[in-house]
Amino acid sequence: MSVLSRFLWRDADEHLVIEPMRRRHLDDVLRIEQGSYPKPWSRNVFQSELDLARGGERHYVVARAGGTVVGYAGLMFVVGDAHVTNIAVAAEQQRSGIGTHLLATLAWEAVRRGCEAMTLEVRVSNTGAQALYRRFGFVPAGVRQRYYENTEDAIVMWCHDIAATEFAERLVSLCPDRVPEGRQR
Image (cartoon, rainbow, N blue to C red; front, side, top):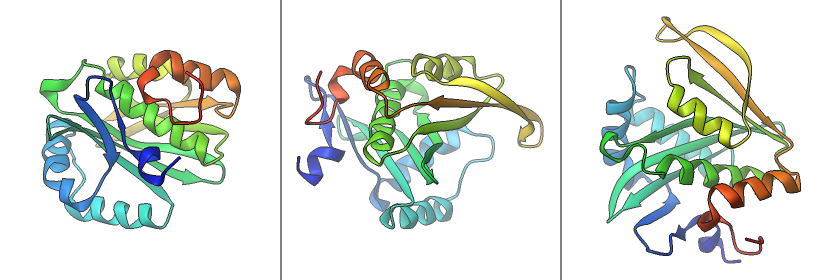
């Protein structure tokens, strides 16, 4: 498998491309970020995260449709686990499956890097995201009180045993067009 093919997958209809996030994507990423979060990350935070990605500590991707960035997602790697730092989709593209594609891409990367589990925080009020995460096998494990803007609680969710065959089968069933080369569909 080529380095490029590990990171760049195309749907059969070639409308959605997932590729590594680069600095050139940041204007579009920041537009989505500002529309998604009350306290958005700054350009400097994203640039710092991309620097950490170059060192292997993070992994960030964007989703492009028709050449336009319509979503992005990131992972942080910590002692055998992968922490989803963010997933965001442009408001006009939400509920179209882009979040599923982004999360599947992150999950395959976590598996490729030998992680045993994935974790994330999600707003208590974001029931749509919670449903997406449950489809991937994430389960609630606790609550971080007043985590968001010191006002809204976060549900901490974990997905364990991601190296198991059953998790790979789940990923294939959820997103068959995101299966890396060398994996069965």
